[in-house]
Image (cartoon, rainbow, N blue to C red; front, top):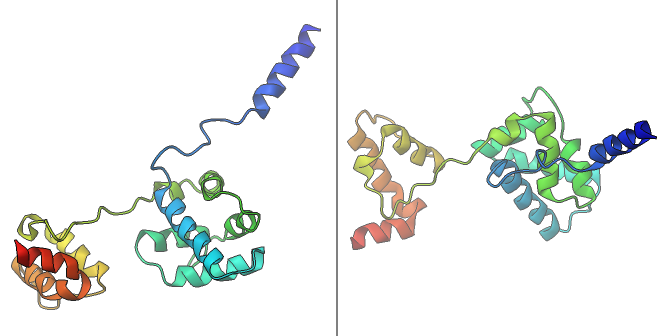
Length: 180
């Protein structure tokens, strides 16, 4: 009888969801953020919620990504140069309207790198002193705008280029800077 009670306790513990599997606040931010926007896009465009349609839409969506989201797409195999392909781990649960957080938990079990991705900090161009930023950060701003600075050698060259392009890419920040 004692043996039977030990088995029932072990079985009960095995069936209780492990809190270590659940995502903590801020964990998997790229996965959760990208998939939430993707899910919303599917709903807005009235895409049929079957695995094949979702997979097609995911591949299309991943072609337009860059930065950390591009890396996420690479990890799940939604890019042409990806080594593995676990897109079905996204498309199938999404076709059943499984919450994005749960999908990311499952992806974390498959590849822990997926949850290590974090978005870069956004620079507030309206208030930041560009002279205090590192050249690396100035280059990152230009990269986000899909611009380059040919012939830029010194920090002042990058700052000049950013100030030149700011009205085009960040008009509200450019206006706030002129008001200072």
